[in-house]
Image (cartoon, rainbow, N blue to C red):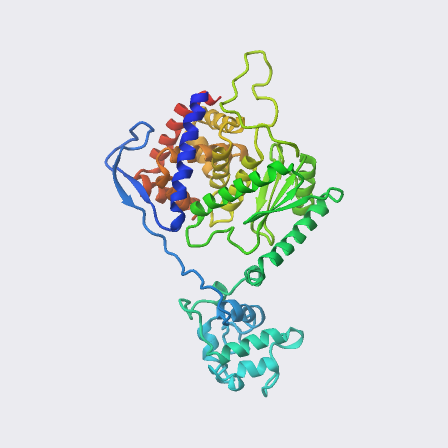
Length: 487
């Protein structure tokens, strides 16, 4: 068992070290492995067709990253959200009441029956500006109680005065809703303009509000890192190492998941890390904040799709000092000795936080299938605490599923038709298999799958030159040969 763990640990650690080399250009395409199309069935030491040539994976189409805020008014950020929220419901090109289409930039500039709605550089002659100010002959717009506030009117007037231009790279024929900044993005833009200290205070206030709602009698300490604010009551000796480990995992995730020049954790707000001493407090937090129950065996999760994103976990050491990590895998007890798990916590706080962060970050990046989000969380956690019995159990679950028929069970997991514990284990196994094929292959595979489960066959073909049957056969052989001793 020790040799098996050591071998699998080397694969994971080597992969993560290799991923760190992508830091200078994390969005650059990596090289994938081409395999022979002539082979009729899988061959080679892991069941995948023998590698022949190396070809660069095709680059993905990427939108131009938004320019830094230079203080000028941008149509997509400042004007389009106002028009789509207040005007396009009636002025949409479909209503029989108006000939003025404000659903596209082209329609906006074309005007309607009232004449030129917008005359660049001349807001005092632009009917749209005059109407929203109530200075035109016709009725003030929007009508009734929906009138625009002074700040919105000033923005539109300033935009017209500055030339009434559309952001470079945007299509004037496309609906404004496809590029208008969302309310969440507008909030983030506003936060980004604040000094870091003020942003941290706002995040801290919101985080403490959540904590108090779930645990009104327990006041946590606040610990500050570069990308995280951690809340809990840990011994001082554990605070800095935990934050340091999480900053390291942040960098690795940024290198792996940053496919378009944007990383889901790169917002202006730091991520809140809630560390609860006991499971009862964690369960109450989930009930109070998310209005749901916690599944058995789940001790951590995250939500990065909300204002003030967070990760919440149960401290495996219950707020005490953590025991040092074992230098070798825990031995199996003899028959009749009781449980085959070692005494004491089986996981470290850093490992649990890493799994929860990686799963949440993957979920919020593109359209990943469930098995990828869960599997990548376990995979990255295993690089932090490789000797934890938790990963032996994940491999054991995958092995038992393989014994029942790997092809069918893996297909069910890929389709999300199994319980999360099995989807997690099989996703972990598939990612360990891909890691054994090399860091570049692994990275290309993960990035490809962020585009959705429907891309699986295409991704397999592009980086392995194999079909799904061959891919699953190779992964099954890997599980049966490498995981047998993990039981």
